[in-house]
Amino acid sequence: MIEMKDVHKAFGDNRVLQGVNLTIPSGTSMVIIGGSGTGKSVALKCILGLISPDSGTITLDGQDVTKGDRDAFLARFGMLFQGGALFDSLPVWQNVAFRLLRGSLKKPWDEAREIAIEKLRRVGLKSEQADKFPAELSGGMQKRVGLARAIAAEPEIIFFDEPTTGLDPIMSGVINDLIREIVTEMGATAMTITHDMTSVRAIADNVAMLHDGVIQWTGPVAEMDKSGDPYLDQFITGSAEGPIEAVR
Image 1 (cartoon, rainbow, N blue to C red):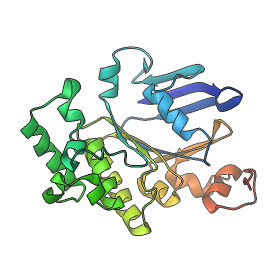
Image 2: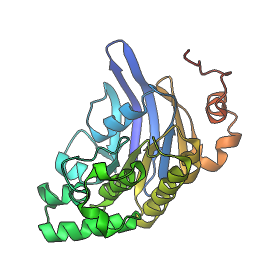
Image 3: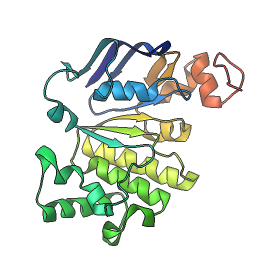
C-alpha cells in the first residue's frame, strides 16, 4: 500500500534520510525502530506530505503522495500522536469526533457524539468519560482517547507515533493489545514508530530498522531475533557495544 523508493531528505547539512527504501503491504502492521534523531518521524511526515523529500518517490496504492486531492488523501489516514495532542479546551467526545464535526466528513452533532462514545467504549472507556476534559483523565486514559480519535473515521491507514511513551509497563501492555486488536479488526494498514521493544513484539507483523538514513534491516518480526544484523542485534539488546555509537 505504501512504498518509499530511494527517499532523501536533508535539513541544511543534516542529511536525515539518505536513500530510504521501504514497502508496507496492505493490511499489515509495520514498526519502524531506530535511535533518537535517526529520521523515523521525518519518514512519517514525508509519507503524509507534511514535508517534501528532496528526491525519491513515495506512493500510496501506486499514486504519488504529492499529487492529487490532499483532502481525499489525508482522509484515508488516522493518527495517534506521541503526546496525545488532545485539545484541552474540548471535552473528550469532541476530541474523538473532531474530524467528524468538520470538513468533508462533517456529520450532525448527535451522530458524531454517538460515534465518539462508541469508539471510547472500544478502547475501554465508559460513556461517563465523554463529557470530561482531557486534564481530568490519567495519562493512560488520554492515550486511549487519542486512539479512539485515530479510529473514529474508520481510516484505512493508521500511524502510531511512540504509542506507549510516558506510560507504566502495565498500561503500555494494555495500549499495545488494543492497537493490535483494533488494527486486526479494521483490516487497517499500520505504521508505528517506537523505541519500546515490547511494543514491537506486540504490534508488528514486520519490522524495519532505520539507521544512518537508510533501512539497515527489514523483515518479519519472527525473524528479528535471528537476523544476524549487528545494528539490529545491538538495538534489541540495548548494548553499549556495537556499530551504533552511544552518545555520551
